[in-house]
Image (tube, rainbow, N blue to C red; front, side):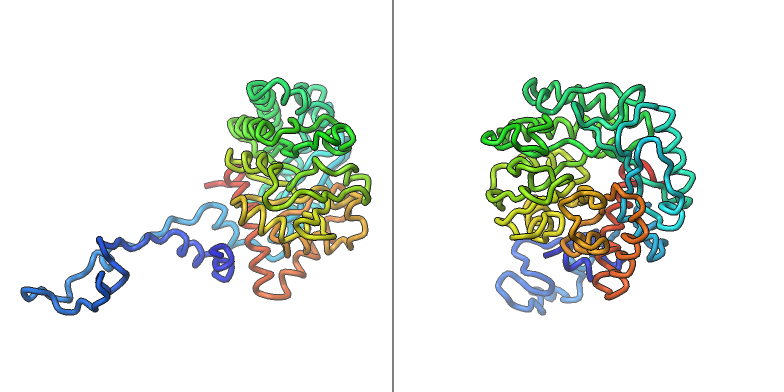
Length: 408
């Protein structure tokens, strides 16, 4: 694959490989030095010199100047590269532990639990800026879907309906609600919404689907209609400068239990590479979603016994190669979630990277150092693994640049 070939290159060489202009070829050209009949074309009729430059050899080769993210990537230490691949949850009413950003250089934070004071949110966002290294600002994210899943309430954000209600009302209602969400997040200095939910709920389960149907978090049970709502939400957030996160790939609509609270009842025996329930994720990707959150559930049709967030079949083969997603792939919570409790903490980060993912989310801030240590140590073991970490850090920095956090 082209992506894998670029991993072997230095960032500067990869940039040149991606941006050099292709030589122009005239009609019937087979390549440099050849004619359409396969002859070497050394001698020209009527004394034409064979030394005259061809269109291919005279075409200029140009490269685009490096972006702010690419320039910054070249300056980061191994510790800073590793830290960019961790997002840390900060519960309402608590302070950001200083070492999360000063020592471990976490890529950013996300707001946990319910925040009802705009002043408290603003203070936390400002503190994240103060603790971050100059020129390497923290990304700020929050779960803000509407309905029951709204971390910002009170005077921090307006109330919006659940996805289930919005799905019944149609895409205009979705656009209105997610425009409101985007405006409220932008006003608080937050760049990423961990929404919209792209899961299609199995109508045979309905509310028995605890993580989505039971909480009214899904736009519906029909993939095409859900996809239209997901695209509308993604577009509305982008219009306010907010990055959308499609979740929970490849879908939680067919499991019974919530992966946050259970390691049982979280297998989806149906979803596979050609599943129509993937249509909603494809719609969100085509609408420009910049992040995808992986499910912690298990999908035997993709990779038996392996949570999707640790599965190369789910991330690399299906999401990236199959659906063409090139943005930031993040986990659901790996800090407190029961679904991954049996996995050693360091492996929760390195297995994601091995599978082709980028960033781990931990609701337990005390795990930050251990996760960053694991990523830094893993990168030091081989040039290929170091480049894998650089690739993901590059995606994080590119996202920060797209969302206006990096200086040009």
